[in-house]
Image 1 (cartoon, helix red, strand yellow):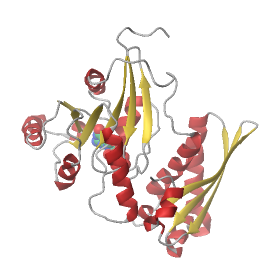
Image 2 (cartoon, helix red, strand yellow):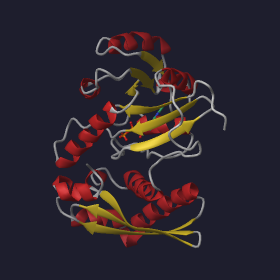
Image 3 (spheres, helix red, strand yellow):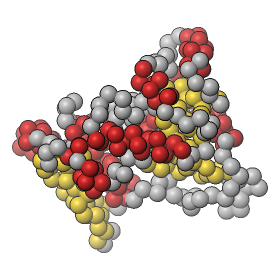
Image 4 (tube, helix red, strand yellow):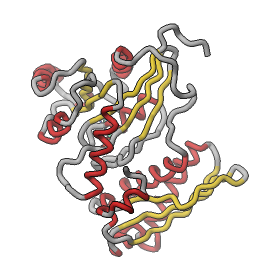
Length: 297
Ligand SMILES: Nc1nc2c(ncn2[C@@H]2O[C@H](COP(=O)(O)OP(=O)(O)OP(=O)(O)O)[C@@H](O)[C@H]2O)c(=O)[nH]1
């Protein structure tokens, strides 16, 4: 590919409280399912890069975990560290809000944004607005809290104004050659994404109280004659949680594994053999060494 004379490349952080639509936005921008989405809050725990390369620009997106203001376990402290770290290294921050919703949790996130990085306010879910006239006064209210470089209302889900958003982001990226091959969508390994898919199904299919205390570990990930073999363990705190995840006659776990396997096959483009076990591991969310093993810094 011959490079455009003013080709730009840079890092973009997507920040916002849980459930405002950060993962959806990233997925729609990079046009492929990479980050996990769910109706429940806080499904993203890791930093995930999504990469979009067009003729003039390479956007390297950093999807950050839902910033946690309510709980104080070691896990959430680790997650907040990841958020703060990822923000200092980027060229521009997208601060995502849900239209007409500005509360203390959003303000808590706004307070940790670094002063020296441009911030674009992305007001998401405008498709839900029955009365569009209410948007302008709302934007005025938010602009009083922090000075934004730009304000772009969008609907991530319905891809409204995403081209405008990309054009605006581009203005803040330095002229530079691409950092990644143009076909790369994420620098996360397939192994990592396999774990993310299982976690997503847990969030979708298991009752409310369970997922926050669970984690997924990929024990083995190998490719044999075009067959991906994935062996995973879901770690839970208590035996009753294990029973819920497994379900009656193992039905729930079967459903989780089968849906996760289908997503993996789509992404890898090949057949997947998936085995998922559930193990009780008390108190893991507060143990520093377990957190390190799971990939948190
Ligand atoms: N109506 C509407 N719903 C949206 C839009 N964008 C996201 N959603 C929904 O909002 C919910 C949360 O979206 P996510 O993308 O998982 O949110 P998130 O900010 O990444 O959440 P965490 O991972 O918890 O931090 C999901 O049910 C999405 O389908 C949008 O533009 N319009």
